[in-house]
Length: 260
Image (cartoon, rainbow, N blue to C red):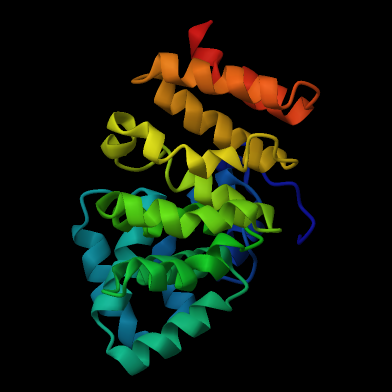
C-alpha cells in the first residue's frame, strides 16, 4: 500500500486505501488522493477530542467544502482556539505527523501568527522543504498574504532563497511571488512594478531543477498578460546569457507560450 501509484479518479481509490488515508496513517501520493481526504474523519483520528466539536462546527458552517478551504479553516481555527503554549505543542506534533494534511494545517498556523515576515519565513521553511508536494504548496499559500502586503521586504528576504542548495527552497521563492499564481489572490504590485521583483528570478534563469524551471516559466507567463514586452525582453536577455543552456531554453519556451 505504501508503494502505490495512486488512482486517476477519486472513485477509483480503493476503499481500504481511503480508509487508511482518512485515519492519517499514510500520506497521499497524488492530487486525486489529496482532494479525496475527508478532513472531518481525519481531524477526529489525529487531534485530541477537545478539538473535535469546535472544528466540526466550523466545517459545518463553512460555505466552501473544498480541500484547500478546509485546510485553511482547520489551520486557522487551531491557531485561534489555542494559547501560546498549547499552540506550540500542537504545531510541533502536527509538523512531525506522518500524514501530509496535518502538516498542511500546521503550515496554515504559521501564517496566522502576528510574527514579522522574516520570522514567518523562518517558521515556514521546514514546510517549504517538505518532501510532500501538498505541504510545499500550502507552505507558500500560508504566507502569501504577508508577502502581498510587504512585497519589497519579501523580495529582499527571499533573494537568498534563490541560491539555496535545496530546489524546494528555490522554488518557494518563485512560486510564492507569482503575479497570478494558483488558488490565491493576484499580486497586483508585481504586475504594476515588475522590475522590483525580477531580481528574484535572475538567479533561477538557468536552474538545473525542472521543478524550479516550471515555476519560473509560469511566473513569467503570468506577467506576460500585463507586461508582454518586458517578458519578451527578459527572455531574450536570458537566451543571450545562456545560449547553450537547455534549462534556459525550456524556461523561455514555457514563459512565452501565451504568445503562440
